[in-house]
Length: 422
Ligand code: HEM
Image (tube, rainbow, N blue to C red):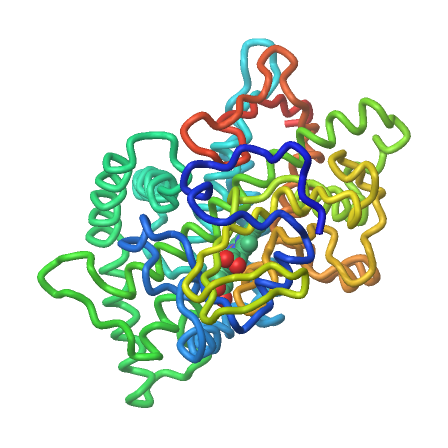
């Protein structure tokens, strides 16, 4: 087990638990049936009984409920019918914003956020994200919710963040989620009466919940209901993660190509971008730590004793830099790094074991088909990167990227860019 010589400072929320730094131990804990989900105790009002937080049979059942959203066929559908048109639509809207010098400038963070909000609305089944006014309102609500729900990592006053999040959830439910749920209830009723086929039903989180029959909500207008929490989780899981990860790739590649001009021509190639995505995701994770609680007294294969009920903070961002796993230069970005046998290029960034990310294929695509046949699935990251590089994206030398200041998330709040070919 390799312990870092100078342990990185953990955010206060994680520092209250025993920290696990090693890649092998984190893998062992995440894959063990003797640990349950932990953490997010301050976010239970947003995430409490969602798929991420439940365990055992309830978790397996929940995975089955949402499995149709993550089948290979669903991925192919999302890619062709959702990702490509949405990215093209957002880029076309941006086309008008040229400055006096004739160059198109934008900020990657809000640009990517708009793309992802439209995509996640479709995955969750949020209707009415259509007119510019309704899209903008949805964007505002979702941005606030995404900031509020993982309150553990906030550097702001947590009570304030929670209060803002609850007010946002209230508005999101009233303006978008409740009407969307009502429509799906009607459709599922028609399906049960035999006037609609299963294929005619929307394929989204809300419909899956209606089909399962766990859609009971407080009719008096309150927001305490499993369905709202699951929708909130999926909205967060499908936006904040990619939003936090994608700008890192552009920042790393700008630096890489400056030092390795021989790779400049590869910047639009699927295979090269796939390597860059995997490598950047290894270096930057979407949470400073994950948590697990032991369900019995036990001893890990490394000899670490864990008491029943003890919470471990799994510091996966540090484990992903372990030189014994990824090589002597593990802390560096190198798209040509060989992935160690039996691992994924992103290491632990999508988790492992039963709670491993369901949306992974949507994000990373399916390598073999895309590379070998040219037509398979590339995933959200590569699709967006290809469009941006085709438009000549470059970091704005006058305005460097700014790190996020309101939370411990490893991400940027602003990445100003020039699009030379827009
Ligand atoms: C860069 C993109 C993403 C990253 C890095 C990421 C990362 C993760 C990680 C690390 C977990 C496991 C958490 C744990 O073990 O405690 C997870 C779970 C999950 N993710 Fe993602 N995710 C991403 C995108 C998505 C997308 C696009 C979706 C949905 C469309 C999604 C849906 C989920 C769901 C439903 C779970 C819970 C799985 C379970 O508990 O069984 N994720 N994600």
